[in-house]
Image 1 (cartoon, helix red, strand yellow):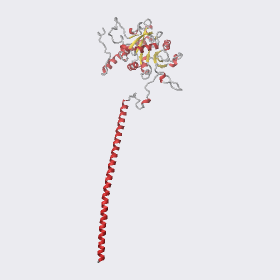
Image 2 (spheres, one colour):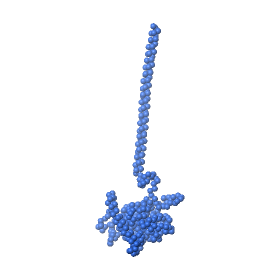
Image 3 (cartoon, one colour):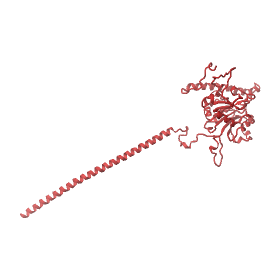
Length: 396
């Protein structure tokens, strides 16, 4: 009996000790859980903060990158390239050219060695005028001028005995005018490196003409479009404004008070002012870029073009277009296309008929060009004419 009571007391004591251990473990568990929770929350908070900063930095970088891309896109959109060259990197694009010949071996010629001082002399030629053309070309120093011949009769090899022939460019097309050649072979991007374009006829005498002095004068006077004056004692003069005046270096207008085509003090239209004839015009680079666009592809005689050249004068045509008196030439007036002068052949000859047909076509083209200009002015609502046609009475 006593032994049974002792065992019962021991069991109670063990049970109480077990409860105490369990309670202690519970307390430790709950306290540990609290610390773990706090640490977890702190870690979560720290991670969220770090992640938030990282996201913010990522967003900032994305916005910066987007802004850079947008700016670059806008820059690329504003970057102009010639039509057709869009797939190419800008630095490889060579937009302009020239007529300088390059060697087959060795180093190529440097642009800077030639382009800054050269101009271009372009002449339509036939073999019958070989000697006259030779006299013209030899007047133009090769260090300052590139020479280009348009052979309208197809004869090229017979020019090779001339000293300068191999350094000139020869282009051949049968029975075409200089305006046909100019439209096809003197594109502004091709002649962009030449300071001035001399687009001359072949029937000119240049005994009293010096090209470098001429260039000096037109640069000083600010002439964008010009021509040398004509020696009236030897030349065929079609328009009085081209006749040489013996006083002064340049004239820009004339006065005519009798006969047809009168020119008064207040006359502002060609051929009283702002006008040169088409037999020996000289264009600045900028003026030629404009004039080339005005040359009609199919109107090869270009009649009527002279009355509109003043629009290409890069400013006031009454100031920027002029005739140089101190450097003058002789215009022989020899018809070449279609045969010889109709005045010197029999009216029934084939030569006369050909020449007459050429003259007739010239007048037809004059009327076509006039109508095209009127239609272009009518259709272009944004264009404002800087030289509106004056009334008939206003010129008086």
